[in-house]
Amino acid sequence: MKCLLLANESAEVLFYWTDTEFEQRVQEQYGVSQEEGERLPAFEDSINTLFAPIIISCSTMVDRLGDNYTSFSTENNHIYVLHQFEECLYIAVNGDGDETEEDLKRKIFVMKKLTEIMFGMVTFSGALLRKELRPQDTEQRNRLWKKLRSLLETYSRLRENDQSFLVEAVERLIHPTLCEQCIEFLERRLVQQINSNMDRMGEEVLHAFILVHTKLLAFYSSRNASNLYSSDLLALIILVQDLYPSLKCFLLQTLEAPTPDPSAPSRVFLESKECPMPHSMYCLPLWPGITLVLLTKVFFYYKTSKAKTIYSIFHLYTQTSQLQNAWTDFKNKAFSRSGSGFTRDLLPSCRNMKTQLCGVYRQFFAAECMGSSQRLAPHLQERALSMVQEKLMDWKDFLLVKSKRNITMEFPGLIHFIYVDRSNGQMIAPSLNVTDRTVSELGKGPLADFIKKKVWSLVATAQRYLQKGYATVTLRDGDYFYCYFLWFENETGYKLEVIDIPSSPDDGAPVGMLTCDYYRKLLRYYSKKHQNEVVKCYELFTVHLGVIPNEYILQHCSQLARKLWEPTRIPLL
Image (cartoon, rainbow, N blue to C red):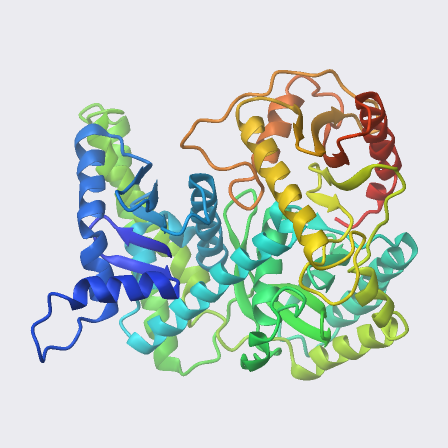
């Protein structure tokens, strides 16, 4: 019984996703009142009818009180979590007890991140986002909604099965020699050859990386590329997994999915200091489970008929003129002597200016006609594939096994750990393969599944305490002992002094990097007292047998952190 819905202030549904149980419940609810012989209303109409009172009441509270409720539960134990972004309301529902309020809130923020990846700054304007999410062409809208639903389901499965998405950090394959060789290969051969070729259709490869399932083998950014944040990289891994799911995470239904065209790029919008910038993403499958991803800079030129070109240029001129008029109106009201100054009366002008700015952005970066025929030449893509396949041919079987047995443990009584370098958003942990036939560090089947539930519970508990300002958590759970530590170091590995971590508001984003990059903000907060040195942030989650004395557990944690400190120096990002 799960649902996620996105609506505007007019109570119009812009997107919805439901599981089978929720869909059946809605059909039963709105089928009972139908007279004999009448067909059931369209499911979208039923969803709209069901949620309209909630959406309208939220809009009324915001208008009259400037505030809104964030969650509520019903008599039948359905949990509703709501969050307002700009003019759009997100609602997540759970009725089977599988998800907590925090889980639903996280799903909302991740959905917001996925829309930002797909539409960029357009998401800042509810009116423009409506045009993107509800195109007039019904078939086009169905394709878009199907894609968004698939991405949401892919994220949910990864969150349930993959440790990197549990803690929202990129997991690296631990093999320093091979990693460094692959980074050098990407830089000196692959990217250089593509960018120097005359058939690259004006595109330039800015980032290139190799994934083994969801784990990062190697990453390279060209010198003139902007920084690729870990939150964006995690979102891109979701997109890759949506195209080419790892069978270890998604068993047999993926075999029925149609194979996408690898030569067709996806338009993605990545964070930058100025605004989300568009890139073309090429996902090139090397072998099942191993993928090469290229991110190229988007250039804008037309390969269409002259009459379309004229229309597009005229539309751009109109948009920029409207933005100029909105800016002039804002300046006159805010800065002129006869203007109203900075009061609430200025809000409509601010909204209008924001809408016009997003409109120009949409026309330049997101409109379908912009660069619609632009892609790397097929023979260049084929050449890139063959080069990487040749490089990794002798390693592919090793990599697939390595991705399932990435690192081993050497401490008696230590059952599991997750070590995260929050400065670069990377993590290291032993594998947990509960759905695979192969044996992981913790065995397979019921034992691994039991430990998995303990690890997922530890992370959820630690994150709740972190939101309240606690950087250290130790607790006993039956026969097991949990530890969580968050600390700061300088660039040489010297541990810096402990500070009081600010607690997060109840309606704030969940702790993570996909949701709202909590750790980037935390690093900025701590770095204010250490402006003359580079500050690093680390986390360690451990599960020990409860019979191990506490002093040994703390000693293990300290030794483990020192042991894992050195591999994190591999310059993957």
